[in-house]
Image (cartoon, rainbow, N blue to C red):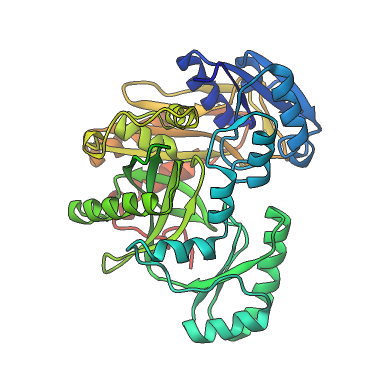
Length: 435
């Protein structure tokens, strides 16, 4: 096991990783930008290093500065969290070159699976149904020919994408050229890779994902499904597990296929298989995230399994000590993402309490929300024996959560969890007006 880990991230995920390390008896090193000098993750870590200016490109994406800090601190491994460098094969290889363990997949695996179009071809050979689509298309004209073949409407997606960027819905040939230019430009700006591919637009549908853990010894398990259909402009707002749209029979089958698929492609680490679930109950594979997901905590609340600790153990070569049948998946858990509406400084914070209520956050009094990073302030998660009870608990927790000085979406989240469409479980990706 590692004795010291550098956390190459910020915000609530950096706090989350540091807490897991402390519980494991592992020392931690924080890195921070000039904008995060007074951040909670810096205060909680055993050591900390400023690695650059407030822009992410100057700090949290500065590979050499992060490597230098790890070597200087005497860390053996680097945990990238999510976002930033978490899916960067070059950084993972740089870690290896400098004698550091990247807590995540091997760089070769990331390179092989990072191109979503190539990944879908691999997955199609494992027995999972894949959304009809293409590999990377080199021009708008090539995209037009592919769309004519697949049939409109189609989705244009960034090959190296994530977080809803580099995605465009195209309903007719007249919309294609402009959408292609927008998607490639956005993808190049966000990921340094402007390549895009097409896939059939399945509508209406729900976004359901499966959480996977796989070790170096060839063991793999699935920690159930998460329904992530509550989205605005491809950005998730609420997640719950299990999905109210998935029957026990469907769940058992898709879990078995997902585990076989992960073993088939030789994946190691924590990962997520993402699907569209159509109105006929068919699961269509979309993509795989080769990292920890923002919404990992809702799965932890349901199963009691700490995904961050298992990421660290797997990276240290420790095999999984439980099998698929050992995973408890009784009850229901719901997560609401609490986002800032604009910049501001926290004047007061009151966090709801009670059994099975969790708020993962980086907020402390005086925390300033800057324009340099995403708007996520924290994640409010609840668990109960039934979905109905979990909904009541979430409503109570949202009413109790107080954040003053920073505009938030707390009231919007409360309206959603009180909406009959959500409480009934009969919702899909169109809930927030997405088309």
